[in-house]
Amino acid sequence: DTGVSQNPRHKITKRGQNVTFRCDPISEHNRLYWYRQTLGQGPEFLTYFQNEAQLEKSRLLSDRFSAERPKGSFSTLEIQRTEQGDSAMYLCASSKDIRLGGEQFFGPGTRLTVL
Amino acid sequence: GIQVEQSPPDLILQEGANSTLRCNFSDSVNNLQWFHQNPWGQLINLFYIPSGTKQNGRLSATTVATERYSLLYISSSQTTDSGVYFCAVVGYYGQNFVFGPGTRLSVLP
Image 1 (spheres, rainbow over the protein chains, first blue to last red):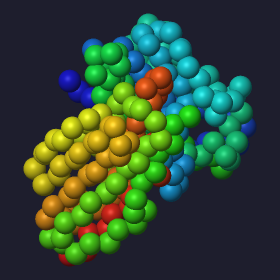
Image 2: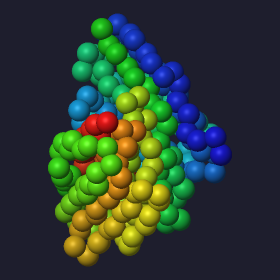
Image 3: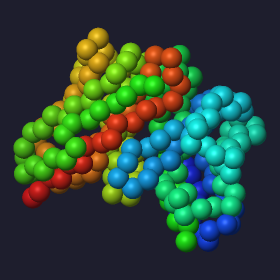
Image 4: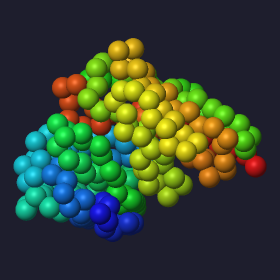
């Protein structure tokens, strides 16, 4: 069990550029979550996957955001036409099915800065 | 949706002191976890405790689900305990975490 990993750890981009983040969950976990955390706040839910199916999306996830988990393993989160308000820490978590306990484990996060 | 409150918002302790952090939630929950967020932003799992009491070294936690609150106890605090402590819950009909606003703890040497 190597834990949840995220890449890159830091990303600085200019407004209007597209960015993509990757999350590798714990191998036996079939649920994968994305959260966003801004300075001084608790993390906020964005979306989650059960295997490869995206089952829920927050209203925070605007049309510029898209997430995929094509083979039910790693996931990517893409932000198109970035805005300064997108600057935040993007956190990924994984868990077993909630009926089996559902304890979530978080990755180290990707810190995005939009200039 | 479910609401989560944490108190106190800020706490300053002298090394060696004990403290209690509280988490109140507005509805029944399937999952409750306590996390410590370190200065680099990593959320470290402390307890998975939708009900009952657990202990891990100097830390312990109690969740009284019927009264919709959870407590995190830190005994003999150390400077390395500094950081933000989050309570997060999954509502009974929910799938994702709702986080509280956190308690920022500073332990002074």
